[in-house]
Length: 509
Image (cartoon, rainbow, N blue to C red):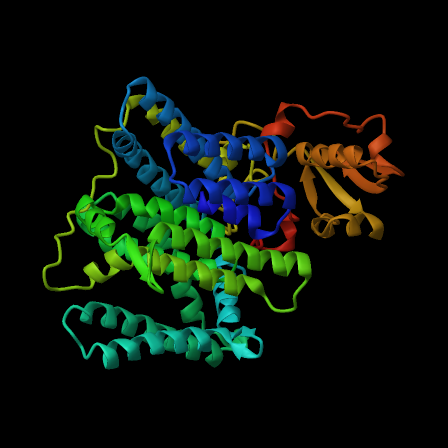
């Protein structure tokens, strides 16, 4: 629910819907979430995405829709079986764990291509640059990382001085010390390489293979219960970085699924410390987590609606990370407690508690990740920031270079945009990348449909199947006018196709 709300509040594309869901979910959270309320949320949020946003949505939104549908199917099944809420959760946990591993696997598998391994254009390098930008960013003239380090040092001082190294406080002090040292190292690393051209190739290549190892190898190692603890910690840390550079909604979604890997003994410890004292009042950790993330979403509103000068994404990410640490604190301190620490047995990803019919969802997830290689959609299929190119007779993928799985030709049925007037480019910033590039006909007709619904006049010069069209208004062109959408336009989503001879496939969402 928090991940959905953060998605709605990221850019406030639909302020009315965002405020309505904010009010509804706040009532749900603070009046005790029941299965009926949660089912209502699943229905309403899924309907919103399918009616108003699909299919042109981000990877994590497609994943969220998938999870919503699976959770609704499981809930109906649980009602039919008259299963308790605890039985419902136990039934869904294997599916949720396996689904997250499926997304991690596809995200890593798509990156097995020549351009992702090229540090000059790799999305991994771009993400590293964005992290360095985050480290150097300022809030009201003060470096953000300096503020974070100061807060961590203050917490560490509080532990050392006020609690005088009491054994019960030692794990928390060690955890704060670790976070502080990591922050200081990152801070100085970021300023050591303010000029990104100077980043050594060794660092760029190490970063590339580290990301591949985390997503591809890590997703497989999570199937081994005794290896889950370190990989979970690594995954939460990676999502903390991702949140700081603007992907708070995806980090919240992944974090909620990573929580399903927590063994029952540690869940019991968490429940025993589920409430914290704040100025003399007892507040549930889940409520505080939700409230802080609502605050992060409101900061995003200030940035996108009030046009503030500083990058609010860093602040939203910092608030999310603070909320996550508060939420996970009982588990983190137990993990870092050598004495009396419960054995971390880990959990099998799949078990017999998952109904057999739920395997349909896992098969569907696998097929969805395969879509680029089948010749279907190239956007939103967990190929985010992968540099993957499957259009044309050859792919840049290391294992599927000859496109042996391709069965549909949507990626090759394209128009080449030769010229767009400035007024058309100004309609939408994304239109700027169209000129000189190709666009699958399905995607081109989706744009024509949107222009038609908006009543716009759109002159465009383009080439299709060797013929050049110079249309003064493509919306009214008899051959291309699109008054309604067909099923391909409802289901498929494609990226802009770069020229094959223009060099490597650049990094895009």
